[in-house]
Length: 179
Image (cartoon, rainbow, N blue to C red; front, side, top):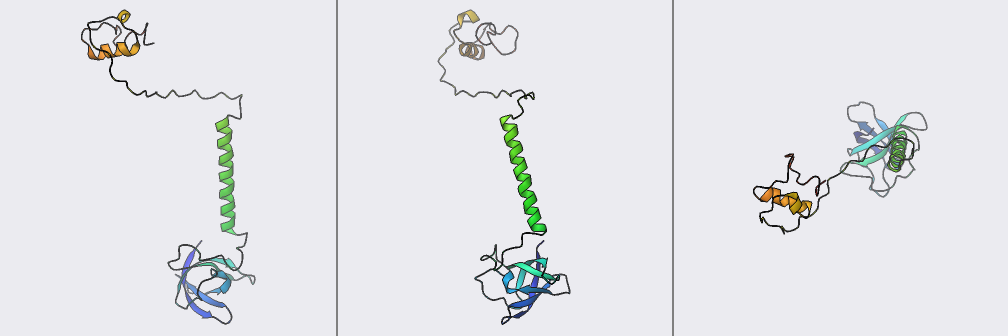
């Protein structure tokens, strides 16, 4: 977990100093290797964001320092990050969960278990661009006088006194054209 604090002391000759974490009264040791490479030397009073780890001596120390206003480190750290600890474990767990989810998605998508019953396909409506109206009301009223379902639908929508929708469901000529 990232914490914040101010650099209280810095020994430039020896490359170390101390940070006072916000809300604490105990200073933390910080080594120059915790700062991003290629940046200016730290200054006392500077606001820092950092993580805390146990050092080789077993005491807490500040690591992976970000300076105030720095969106991400200015360069790579002087020492490679330790491949242990809660942050590393959380990244590994996340990667494992994503890998399992990806495999599951492929199995489901490809239908690896062919013996399992598949869900019924959902029929999506097909949207066909409308053609310009090429029909006109000419007195025809019956399905036997129509040449297509589209023509019957045009007549039932636009022409008076049609006799093509016997059951009143809005679909004309169900037994001949619009089944």
